[in-house]
Amino acid sequence: MQGFSFDTVRQIICAVGSRHQLGATCTSLGMTHVLFVTDPGILEFNLHLDAIQSIQNSGLKVTIYSDVQADPPEAVILAATASAKKSQINGVVGYGGGSSMDVAKLIALLANPAQSQNITEIYGVNNVTGKRLPLIQVPTTAGTGSEVTAVAIVTTGETTKMGVVSPILLADAAILDAELTIGLPSHVTAATGIDAMVHAIESFTSAIKKNPYSDMLAREGLRLLDQNLQTAIHDKKNLIARENMLLGAMMAGQAFANSPVAAVHALAYPLGGHFHIPHGLSNSLVLIEVMRFNLLHATDLYAELFKTLEPNGAGNNTELAMKLIARLERHIIDSGLPRKLNEIKFQDHRGESQFIQKEHLPALAADAMKQTRLLMNNPRPLLEADALAIYQAAYS
Ligand SMILES: NC(=O)c1ccc[n+]([C@@H]2O[C@H](COP(=O)([O-])OP(=O)(O)OC[C@H]3O[C@@H](n4cnc5c(N)ncnc54)[C@H](O)[C@@H]3O)[C@@H](O)[C@H]2O)c1
Ligand SMILES: [Fe+2]
Figure 1: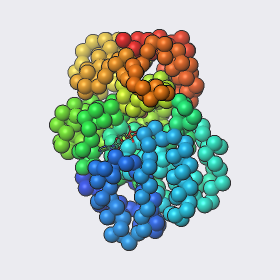
Figure 2: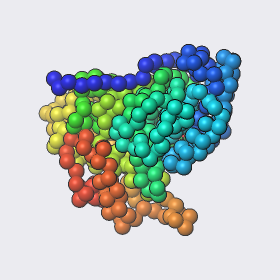
Figure 3: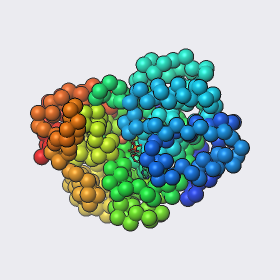
């Protein structure tokens, strides 16, 4: 076996109602003034009230930062960091989807008075030095796994996304409370759930850092997600399905934090950058075509994953691998998500709504090639012409 190293968060609290333990967890980490990082949607649904109450009941001061935007732009991180420094907070809670948790990670780092690096110095892998403030993550989507990953994704410039990757970004604790995900709209449950499945699949087939620990988490994460996604979408208040989705997404997150994602994400990011398609949906739109592209190079691993989902599945490895692809396609159809790029509308620079055109695809392919951090993990080498062919197949 090839040697490996595995990092994850120190404490995971997974229980229905565990948001009420947030104050005690902040106290245990020495926080006295907490910055609570979230987005306007969470406040609108009053999802923050119990958590804020819990922090206040522990006698701690709390300041709310709620201007997080989906696919957070760099400017948001800088504004949030400036306001955090002004309030002299000494701990950070990320509360929401991947966007809020990613912003929380960067604030915990950049608002630390002992930190001298600025954001442009830390993009890429292992460029962070120094320490961050204490950090707790509370996911309200079952998707990104950001609560257990060492990655924060930032939208830089007009259309590009960049990652800050460092074990220093791993939180001190993650709190998983399925009640927080009950109100998720079906299309968000669907898109974020597919994102989590992609994390498990891409981690399991990752070319470089795949290891027995990440494999175990990818297999079990995918099994939980596969078994519970449709129930969570169609029986929204089913707490058992919701908790299994949170657990599955977290396991997939732990897996890909140590055995990283690949071409599905590399081709999904330009869709978010150019057209503001939500991250999970972007993944879903290219997933099937990337898997078809990878099939010959990932046959045995896809087959093994299918066997995890269907232990009695019959057929040779090629047939089982194709059944895995068909099963994911079925999930996408049953989730009610759009399936092809030509179904997607976006706002152009004049603010007018229009459908994605075939003419947009070459720019996407060129941008995908910039995701070298991800493409190097793909089981099959992928060139710009391949990326374009995949977008074309995913178009109509
Ligand atoms: N750090 C990582 O490891 C990692 C991994 C994958 C993706 N990401 C990043 O995460 C972001 C996407 O995160 P996301 O998919 O979780 O979505 P998100 O955080 O952008 O949230 C999407 C929307 O869902 C709403 N929402 C969240 N929870 C809700 C709830 N319980 N009930 C009702 N509405 C709710 C939010 O208000 C928001 O409007 C992207 O920026 C992506 O690049 C990060
Ligand atoms: Fe993702």
